[in-house]
Image 1 (tube, rainbow, N blue to C red):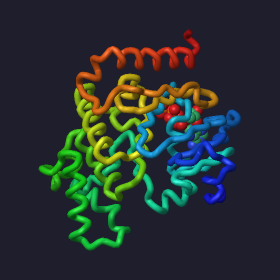
Image 2 (cartoon, rainbow, N blue to C red; image 1 turned 90 degrees about the vertical axis):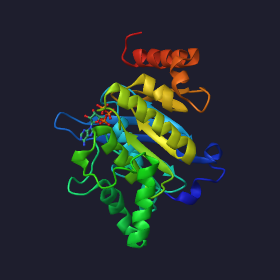
Image 3 (cartoon, rainbow, N blue to C red; image 1 turned 90 degrees about the horizontal axis):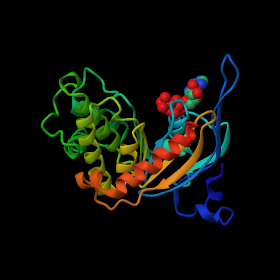
Length: 272
Ligand SMILES: Nc1ncnc2c1ncn2[C@@H]1O[C@H](COP(=O)(O)OP(=O)(O)OP(=O)(O)O)[C@@H](O)[C@H]1O
């Protein structure tokens, strides 16, 4: 794809979009026939948006993130990130990727884990250490710099993963069910921390979740997907005021919006 085509009047509605997905499809070969993981996915995302992806298991949420992150190639359609191909965006370190389970090296401390990917940058050892420390402070782990992953709770390990992803100061964060394995209270805490981080950095976030509450609480838009093939069923704008906090969870609008997402999911599951 020629990136220079993207901001011309051939596609005027895309001007200003940070992420643009047009007719994206993905088919996987399988012994029992082809799996259509995604079909005709179209989405325009502006800088600073927080997009929650929700849908039944197997509807292609992870596949979509992996395509954005250049870990998979689309079978059809095209996409751009800041006017670049996913490959260029990856090479330019435009995004950080956070997996469901923290992928930390067990034999390295929190600080060393965050410093590791910075080795490819032209920074001195001291500069790398300062940057890694600043990122760990940002996620509230300034007192745990020298702890090994096994000396940290699951939530803390995931915070190290977030600090590591932020270390490059990427434009975007791709987060694949990052808090799925955490208990309810820790998850709530992580949600609040992530929101504060998002408010202060204005990163653009794609966040996969199975939790309706989490999707509505965090996002500016909830994208509801259908399974087999994965398509966008509905995009629900979330107009809850910012900054959000404990009172948001109790607000009538929060209940209305979670109800709207639930209704869309029921329709997707064929239960309406
Ligand atoms: N490498 C692969 N080879 C073959 N099929 C695959 C591959 N990766 C994913 N799939 C299939 O593509 C579909 C979408 O999978 P994907 O993991 O993207 O869904 P998901 O919505 O993230 O699921 P979950 O919510 O369970 O994590 C599923 O039917 C899955 O079996």
